Image (cartoon, rainbow, N blue to C red; front, side, top):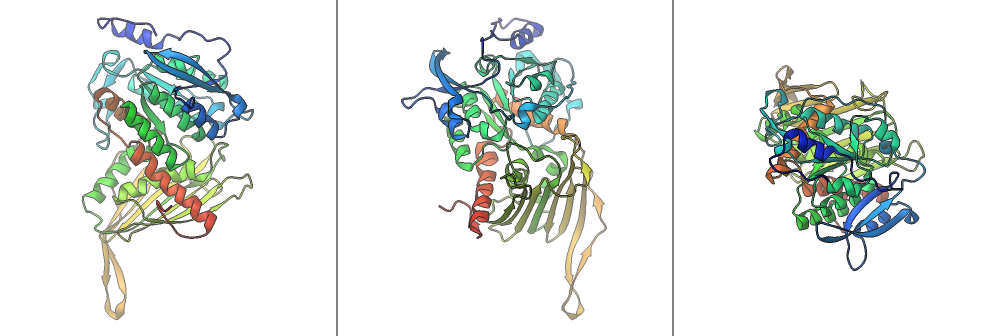
Length: 458
């Protein structure tokens, strides 16, 4: 990357970051992953092999960066490209070259009301790894923040869908030119690519699911701690203003003692090539329900089915029991009727619902309709032994709505501030990776063995 003095102008700094790196011949259709060398070889190579990529497609070579002896790994995608790598046509619009003064996560982000400052002098240089459907949402969010970023994706179709974004020819070059990276690639690649980002000394924003299993997230957490890098998991619904308003009411005691939380993340939509209902949909609420409840579930019972006969669970039904006695339920899948057009996937129908029931109140949050309804009250005893509901009329909670790009903008605003300030602003690899994936691991085991599974049991 071109070096510029501290006194350089904003335009000069942005130009230095966005200039295309030196082209490495013959590598444009490959995915490169950097990792620290060790006596047993590249840890990224091992992770890549374990993720299911053909071993014949994995190579390593030594290279030196910042006086540290390293090796890089690259592996070419299999013949059938993933949905993320294929990409869809999209456009990215944004505002000029100024960045907001960023608040801590959980307090909401009002971009229009923020004071903007010199981006190039204050904000980290960003690399977007993976430019498929949701990667392009990230690109739009970065543009909305006024952040000039580099991209990396081995798919020419994905590159063509973002004509306004400069691309690094290799992951090595992209990481060398940036301070932080967004990983929005297929789930089975997360473990290896995320390690490469951390080993390069870059901050890591890792889209959900953090990894395929909780054990892989434990490994990444240890690497983040070793390297001292900021790591944040992209858990979309935590940054939705209506979810934050509901969370605040629960924490304030408006619901009294909780007795049930349920979620539906289902509809009629594409079955992803790289994952099933657990990692694509259920993971959202495997995080959100414990976050709302203020505790992790203790036991799980799940039924997983493969209605399309393609070898993946495209319908998941998960029951949870929390230590407090509250119960939970998650429905996820791509083969059920939807109610609203999906805001991210064209042509898809979706339901994204969250319900919370407590002693003193009930709430329904419809993310697709941008509606949060509250019923205050409780059941009261009546003559004859019956208990009758004595709830006030439904009231609509005055919390702002936000489109997908706006929610991701809020997540990235928090992440950028965390990288800049060195203070975490969102869920890290323990809370956002290990915890929800432990629930999904237990769900798989429960479905396989047909029994209730205690989370964390050997």
